[in-house]
Image (cartoon, rainbow, N blue to C red; front, side):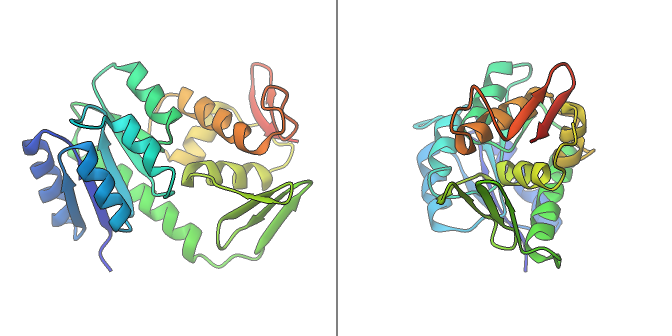
Length: 228
Protein backbone atom coordinates (compact mmCIF):
# COMPACT_ATOMS: atom_id res chain seq x y z
CA UNK A 1 0.00 0.00 0.00
CA UNK A 2 1.33 3.44 -0.95
CA UNK A 3 2.26 5.73 1.90
CA UNK A 4 0.00 8.74 2.23
CA UNK A 5 1.46 12.24 2.70
CA UNK A 6 -0.23 15.60 3.22
CA UNK A 7 1.77 18.61 1.99
CA UNK A 8 0.62 22.02 3.25
CA UNK A 9 2.11 25.25 1.91
CA UNK A 10 0.63 28.41 0.37
CA UNK A 11 3.37 28.52 -2.29
CA UNK A 12 1.86 26.43 -5.05
CA UNK A 13 5.10 25.91 -6.97
CA UNK A 14 6.73 24.41 -3.87
CA UNK A 15 3.76 22.14 -3.29
CA UNK A 16 3.77 21.08 -6.93
CA UNK A 17 7.48 20.21 -6.79
CA UNK A 18 7.18 18.21 -3.56
CA UNK A 19 4.09 16.39 -4.79
CA UNK A 20 5.75 15.42 -8.06
CA UNK A 21 8.92 14.20 -6.36
CA UNK A 22 7.07 12.12 -3.73
CA UNK A 23 4.76 10.61 -6.32
CA UNK A 24 7.83 9.54 -8.29
CA UNK A 25 8.67 7.41 -5.23
CA UNK A 26 5.23 5.81 -5.28
CA UNK A 27 3.65 7.85 -2.50
CA UNK A 28 0.09 9.15 -2.46
CA UNK A 29 0.11 12.92 -1.93
CA UNK A 30 -2.71 15.26 -0.92
CA UNK A 31 -2.16 19.01 -0.89
CA UNK A 32 -3.54 22.01 0.98
CA UNK A 33 -2.79 25.70 0.65
CA UNK A 34 -4.16 27.12 3.91
CA UNK A 35 -4.63 26.06 7.51
CA UNK A 36 -8.37 25.43 7.34
CA UNK A 37 -8.05 23.09 4.37
CA UNK A 38 -5.17 21.28 6.08
CA UNK A 39 -7.26 20.59 9.19
CA UNK A 40 -10.19 19.30 7.15
CA UNK A 41 -7.95 16.87 5.28
CA UNK A 42 -6.12 15.76 8.44
CA UNK A 43 -9.46 14.94 10.10
CA UNK A 44 -10.82 13.09 7.08
CA UNK A 45 -7.75 10.96 6.23
CA UNK A 46 -5.11 8.80 7.89
CA UNK A 47 -1.76 10.16 6.75
CA UNK A 48 1.64 8.65 7.39
CA UNK A 49 3.30 12.08 7.54
CA UNK A 50 2.17 15.70 7.31
CA UNK A 51 4.55 18.33 5.89
CA UNK A 52 3.32 21.63 7.33
CA UNK A 53 4.57 25.13 6.57
CA UNK A 54 4.57 27.62 9.46
CA UNK A 55 3.36 30.62 7.45
CA UNK A 56 -0.15 29.81 6.19
CA UNK A 57 -3.29 31.83 5.38
CA UNK A 58 -6.40 31.59 7.61
CA UNK A 59 -4.74 29.49 10.36
CA UNK A 60 -0.97 29.49 10.82
CA UNK A 61 1.00 26.26 10.85
CA UNK A 62 1.73 26.14 14.59
CA UNK A 63 -1.98 26.51 15.38
CA UNK A 64 -2.79 23.81 12.82
CA UNK A 65 -0.24 21.49 14.42
CA UNK A 66 -1.67 22.17 17.87
CA UNK A 67 -5.19 21.34 16.69
CA UNK A 68 -4.04 18.18 14.89
CA UNK A 69 -2.53 17.02 18.17
CA UNK A 70 -5.99 17.10 19.73
CA UNK A 71 -7.12 14.19 17.55
CA UNK A 72 -4.11 12.52 15.91
CA UNK A 73 -0.53 11.37 16.67
CA UNK A 74 0.43 11.56 12.97
CA UNK A 75 4.09 12.64 12.57
CA UNK A 76 4.32 16.31 11.60
CA UNK A 77 7.35 17.94 9.96
CA UNK A 78 7.22 21.72 10.23
CA UNK A 79 8.70 23.83 7.42
CA UNK A 80 10.21 27.04 8.80
CA UNK A 81 11.92 30.10 7.40
CA UNK A 82 15.71 30.07 7.30
CA UNK A 83 17.22 30.90 10.71
CA UNK A 84 13.77 31.52 12.24
CA UNK A 85 14.60 29.83 15.54
CA UNK A 86 11.37 30.98 17.18
CA UNK A 87 9.36 29.16 14.49
CA UNK A 88 11.29 25.95 15.10
CA UNK A 89 10.81 26.08 18.85
CA UNK A 90 7.15 27.05 18.61
CA UNK A 91 6.51 24.22 16.17
CA UNK A 92 8.04 21.70 18.56
CA UNK A 93 6.16 23.19 21.51
CA UNK A 94 2.86 22.68 19.69
CA UNK A 95 3.54 19.05 18.84
CA UNK A 96 5.70 18.85 15.72
CA UNK A 97 8.02 15.84 15.52
CA UNK A 98 10.67 17.46 13.34
CA UNK A 99 11.37 20.56 11.28
CA UNK A 100 13.17 21.51 8.09
CA UNK A 101 14.18 25.01 7.02
CA UNK A 102 13.60 26.75 3.70
CA UNK A 103 15.18 26.58 1.25
CA UNK A 104 15.63 22.83 1.53
CA UNK A 105 16.87 20.09 -0.74
CA UNK A 106 14.01 17.81 -1.80
CA UNK A 107 16.30 14.81 -1.26
CA UNK A 108 16.73 15.80 2.38
CA UNK A 109 12.98 16.14 2.83
CA UNK A 110 12.37 12.75 1.25
CA UNK A 111 15.04 11.18 3.45
CA UNK A 112 13.31 12.52 6.56
CA UNK A 113 9.90 11.34 5.40
CA UNK A 114 11.20 7.86 4.65
CA UNK A 115 13.02 7.69 8.01
CA UNK A 116 9.82 8.63 9.86
CA UNK A 117 7.80 6.04 7.94
CA UNK A 118 10.47 3.39 8.50
CA UNK A 119 10.54 3.94 12.25
CA UNK A 120 6.75 4.05 12.46
CA UNK A 121 6.48 0.81 10.47
CA UNK A 122 8.99 -0.92 12.73
CA UNK A 123 7.00 0.16 15.74
CA UNK A 124 3.77 -1.25 14.29
CA UNK A 125 4.95 -4.41 12.56
CA UNK A 126 8.18 -5.72 14.08
CA UNK A 127 7.67 -8.71 16.34
CA UNK A 128 8.32 -7.83 19.96
CA UNK A 129 9.22 -10.12 22.83
CA UNK A 130 7.69 -7.78 25.38
CA UNK A 131 4.11 -6.68 24.81
CA UNK A 132 3.86 -4.58 27.95
CA UNK A 133 6.35 -2.59 29.97
CA UNK A 134 5.47 -1.34 33.45
CA UNK A 135 7.74 0.71 35.69
CA UNK A 136 6.33 2.17 38.88
CA UNK A 137 3.17 4.09 37.88
CA UNK A 138 3.76 4.00 34.09
CA UNK A 139 2.58 1.18 31.82
CA UNK A 140 3.21 0.88 28.08
CA UNK A 141 1.33 -1.40 25.71
CA UNK A 142 4.08 -1.63 23.12
CA UNK A 143 2.00 -3.05 20.27
CA UNK A 144 -0.84 -0.53 20.55
CA UNK A 145 1.46 2.28 21.81
CA UNK A 146 -0.98 3.07 24.63
CA UNK A 147 0.33 4.71 27.80
CA UNK A 148 -1.25 4.57 31.25
CA UNK A 149 0.06 6.80 34.04
CA UNK A 150 -1.24 6.43 37.58
CA UNK A 151 -4.25 4.50 36.33
CA UNK A 152 -5.29 6.91 33.57
CA UNK A 153 -4.52 6.65 29.88
CA UNK A 154 -2.62 9.65 28.54
CA UNK A 155 -2.15 10.91 25.01
CA UNK A 156 1.37 11.15 23.57
CA UNK A 157 2.55 12.21 20.13
CA UNK A 158 4.48 9.64 18.11
CA UNK A 159 7.82 11.17 19.06
CA UNK A 160 6.91 11.56 22.73
CA UNK A 161 5.97 7.88 22.86
CA UNK A 162 9.23 6.86 21.15
CA UNK A 163 11.18 8.91 23.69
CA UNK A 164 9.35 7.40 26.67
CA UNK A 165 9.70 3.82 25.42
CA UNK A 166 13.40 4.39 24.78
CA UNK A 167 13.97 5.75 28.28
CA UNK A 168 11.97 2.96 29.93
CA UNK A 169 13.92 0.37 28.00
CA UNK A 170 17.22 1.82 29.20
CA UNK A 171 16.67 2.53 32.89
CA UNK A 172 19.42 4.51 34.59
CA UNK A 173 21.45 4.98 31.40
CA UNK A 174 22.37 8.63 30.86
CA UNK A 175 22.09 9.86 27.26
CA UNK A 176 23.37 13.13 25.92
CA UNK A 177 21.08 15.28 23.81
CA UNK A 178 23.19 14.44 20.77
CA UNK A 179 22.80 10.69 21.42
CA UNK A 180 19.02 11.00 21.81
CA UNK A 181 18.81 13.10 18.66
CA UNK A 182 20.73 10.49 16.66
CA UNK A 183 18.87 7.54 18.21
CA UNK A 184 15.31 8.82 17.86
CA UNK A 185 15.45 11.33 15.03
CA UNK A 186 17.99 9.42 12.96
CA UNK A 187 21.49 10.08 11.73
CA UNK A 188 20.05 11.76 8.63
CA UNK A 189 18.68 14.54 10.83
CA UNK A 190 21.44 16.90 11.94
CA UNK A 191 18.94 18.82 14.02
CA UNK A 192 19.24 21.20 16.95
CA UNK A 193 19.64 19.61 20.39
CA UNK A 194 16.88 21.95 21.59
CA UNK A 195 14.54 19.60 19.76
CA UNK A 196 15.32 17.03 22.45
CA UNK A 197 14.86 19.53 25.28
CA UNK A 198 11.42 20.56 24.03
CA UNK A 199 10.22 16.97 23.69
CA UNK A 200 11.54 16.03 27.14
CA UNK A 201 9.76 19.04 28.64
CA UNK A 202 6.47 18.15 26.92
CA UNK A 203 6.79 14.53 28.03
CA UNK A 204 7.45 15.54 31.62
CA UNK A 205 4.33 17.71 31.58
CA UNK A 206 2.29 14.63 30.71
CA UNK A 207 3.79 11.95 32.96
CA UNK A 208 5.19 13.77 35.99
CA UNK A 209 3.07 14.87 38.94
CA UNK A 210 5.39 17.87 39.29
CA UNK A 211 7.25 18.54 36.01
CA UNK A 212 9.58 21.02 37.73
CA UNK A 213 10.69 18.25 40.11
CA UNK A 214 10.67 15.16 37.86
CA UNK A 215 10.74 11.67 39.39
CA UNK A 216 10.91 9.70 36.15
CA UNK A 217 12.87 11.53 33.45
CA UNK A 218 15.73 13.20 35.26
CA UNK A 219 18.56 15.50 34.21
CA UNK A 220 22.20 14.64 34.77
CA UNK A 221 23.75 18.07 35.12
CA UNK A 222 25.86 19.01 32.09
CA UNK A 223 25.49 15.51 30.62
CA UNK A 224 21.96 14.64 29.53
CA UNK A 225 18.83 12.75 30.57
CA UNK A 226 18.03 9.41 32.14
CA UNK A 227 15.01 7.43 33.39
CA UNK A 228 15.03 6.80 37.15
